[in-house]
Length: 416
Image (cartoon, rainbow, N blue to C red; front, top):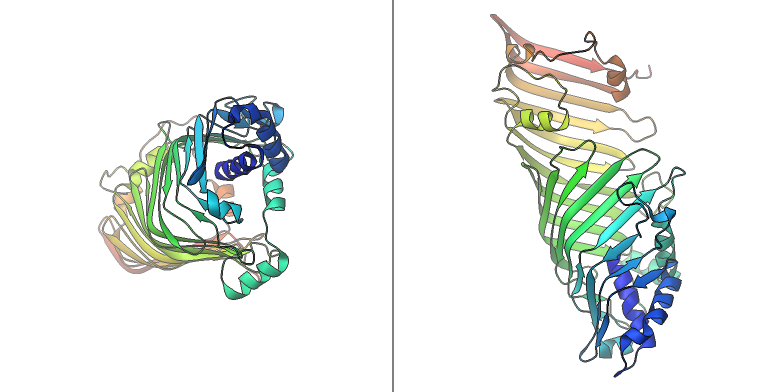
C-alpha cells in the first residue's frame, strides 16, 4: 500500500516539477494529484527533494495519507490517517521513464504507521484507496487474457515489464481494529526487506515483527519469515517459495509453498494453495500456558513436551487437506491425515494412528480453583463439527496393558 502511494508521488513529481525549481513550491499540486489518484487526501509535512540524473529520485519527509476523521480512527489511535511515515524515498531511471517504462530504484520507507479499521457495517477505511488503485491499475482486457493464456506478465505493447531494485521498510507498525468482531491487533517493530524484482523473477525476502492482541501473550508474539527464492507473478496472481523458514516465538516452521488465483472469480474461494511443512516446537506445555492459560494440564511435567510434525497440505475452494501427516510427541509417533471440508458446512475428519502410549501420564490433571463445578464443554465440542478416530497399537493405564485401542470423536452427524 505504501509502495503504491510512493510510486504515485513519483508520477506526480514528474508531472509538476522541472529542473532547478524548489519542489516544495509544488507541494499542493503533488498533494492534489495523489489525492485524485487515491481518492484520499495527502498531506506532506516534511521537505521534498528531487534528484534528476541518472535517477529521478524523490525524497519525502513526514507525510500522511487519509484525513484525520472518524473514518480513519482506530481503537488505539483515534483520528489516525490510513498511513503516515517519517520519511520515504523512491526513484526511477529517467530515460526509460520518458518512454513509459518503470525501472525503479530501491524504495525505502522509514517509520510507516498503517491504521486499518473495519466499521460496524463491515466497510474498511482502506477500501477507497484499493478501489482507486484497482481502477487505475489493471491492464487492457486483451492483454490480460493473453498473459493468462501464456503464463507471462501482462505488459503494454513494446514496453518492458516493471523492475524494482528492492523494497525496504524500517521500524514499521500496523494497527487493525474490527468493530464488527471486536478484534484488535497491532504489529510493531516491523522490518521488511526484499531484493530486486521483475514479474516472474525470483528474489529474497525477509520480514520480522512483534504482534500483540487480546488472544496473544501479554509480552507479544515475535514473528520472523525468510525465504531466499520467492517468485511473484501479478497477473494472474501467483506466489511460489520452494524454501521458507518461519519463526513464531520458539516454534519453527520450514517448508515450501505455492499460491495461485484460479480463473473463476465467482468461486467460493478463487485461489488454491499448497506445500509442505515441518514444525518443531520445544514445548507444547509452554504454548498452552501462553495461549490458553486457564486450561488444566497433566501433572506430569514431562508430558506435552517437544513436538515434531511433518506434512503436505493443500487448500482449494475453502477445503483443507493435511496428508500424509507424521507427528512425534512425548515419544509417541502418530501417522495419518486430517481434512476440513469447504464452507458453509465445514466439517473436520481425521484418522491418526499412534504406536504406543502411557495414558496414565495424562489422566492426573492440575487442580485449578474454579468458581463453579467443572462441566464438559459439550457445546464447544459440537461446534467443532468433527468426525474421526485415534488408534494406538499399544496402550498402558496403571497396570493394565492393552492392544489395538480405538477412540472415536463424533460431533457432527453424517447423512445416512
